[in-house]
Length: 371
Image (cartoon, rainbow, N blue to C red; front, side, top):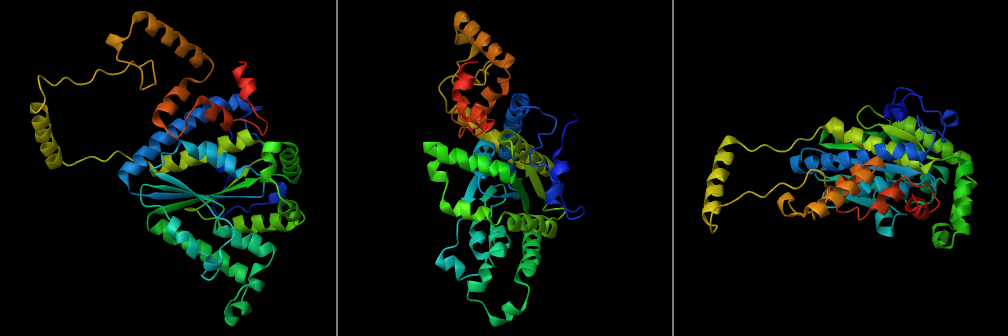
């Protein structure tokens, strides 16, 4: 099968999204997650490097909005794909039920403080779209204190237009808004709910409210479909991601994040000739202040992606041979890029974190340790 590009899941307001025609179990060109490991890890590595440039350049901000039904895998996608982002340039915001203070303002008010500065990325775990999802399904505006004139209008229809205008304003002033709908089937949600009930350490993830919301499944599907069709634009698109297979959803989101950063194409800042001349003079002063002659640091061995490895000339030949052999074994297993990823992304603490990124709902540590 040909490679499934992210544009196959992209909606920009031209082609209508039909949720009943969408295959939430799609896995593109892959038959299982093992085939996707290599690309997934390399995507994370590329994302990390591009984010460093984005932060240094400070020209454009990005918001990735995640919306989904319960148990669709939002938290797992954000934890695994976005965990590669450096903490000083990326931040997640989890939006719960509005507080009394938040409810006393317009529905977009509480989101302003989460807008990213240029060069930064904000992750919205749920968002203002809840007002045209939960708000629409349960007609929440009926119990809100609103001006009488608002009750004479189609509030939800107005909010679609308001959201489009809000996102256009953000784009026009330097912030892209990329929206991702993780589309899980009703059957797969049921399986994941059962898993949460049967697994003690997952019990906290399930509540009676989750079960009650399933009764409104058809209403939610209509709300999601209309949301995508009413608020997709060329510059602030929606991506509808098949979410029945967690590993494929995570791979697809990594592709979306990578594509977005590649389109921005951030570059390392270049200082002017005058500034370069000034710093070169300062370099001379610094070098002169050191005892003896300044010697540049010896480059690390290219075979390794571990900053703790000593320089080549002081590594014992025997130890070097052992490390090279170990590195080659990892390369053969498809984990060559993981070593580099760990160096460039300190927020990812271990190989286990990468493994979890392409795992299904069940635990996979034992399976991978045995290989």
